[in-house]
Every structure is written in structure tokens, then in C-alpha cells.
Image 1 (cartoon, rainbow, N blue to C red):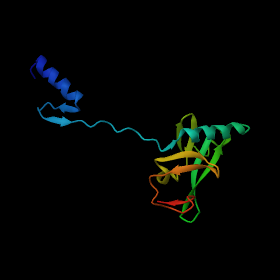
Image 2: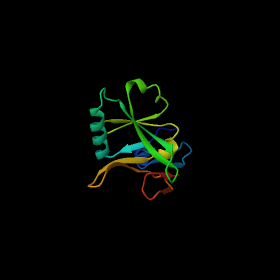
Image 3: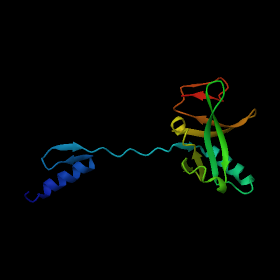
Length: 150
């Protein structure tokens, strides 16, 4: 192959910046940008603050919380939250570990497909204070909001 001229080299550089790749055959191919990796589970700022407050009250302080699902409620499944102590780390070694806003959340490996992409928020109103889950996989929820189906 003959030495590239300055103009050809600049054309190749401009093509790379635009996401195009020039093949040795002279054809142009579109290079796809890598997709950003989305977390399996996300926490809102309010939820992270509340979890840190609750964990600070425990003695000894837990290393994180575990989110899993139970088959109950009028629509099929409901969320459960449990503390994870250092002694429990062997039990959660197959779970998805997500660290978000300084809080470690272990997502139960058996529930991962139903929970993937869920955002957890903490809402404090005059009537109730609770964790609220926004699950993009949920196809239906019950009237009270305690259970869901996928």
C-alpha cells in the first residue's frame, strides 16, 4: 500500500471522529458507539440517605441491604429488604452487588430478571413513610401498590 497523503490521513481522522471506519478495501463502515452499562438497581438520593440512617442505628453496622422478592400479595410478588452483615456475605456471594450513592445493595440472583432496572425511592408524607419501587418490568400492580406482576 502506498504511503497516505496528508489529505487522506486527515480524511481518515475526520471519519473516525464521526463514527465511521474506512476499510482497507476503500469501503466505509459505521462504527457503533458502545452502549452505556445500566445498573441492575438504582437508588434515589432520599433512599440512600434513609438506608444509611437505618444502617447506622444497627450494632454492628451492616455492610449493605439485600433486595429480593417473595411470592405474596394480590398480584404475585412483593419486595423484601434485609440487612446484610459481614457474617452473611457468603450467603450473598452469587447476588448482584450494586454500590450507588455510598450504599451497597445486593440484588437476589433469583429475582434479578424481575428487578433489573428498578429504581428505589424513599417517600415521607403525613400519612406514611415508605420505600417506593419503580420497576420498568412490572406489567401490573395491585391497588395498594404492595405487589406486582411481570
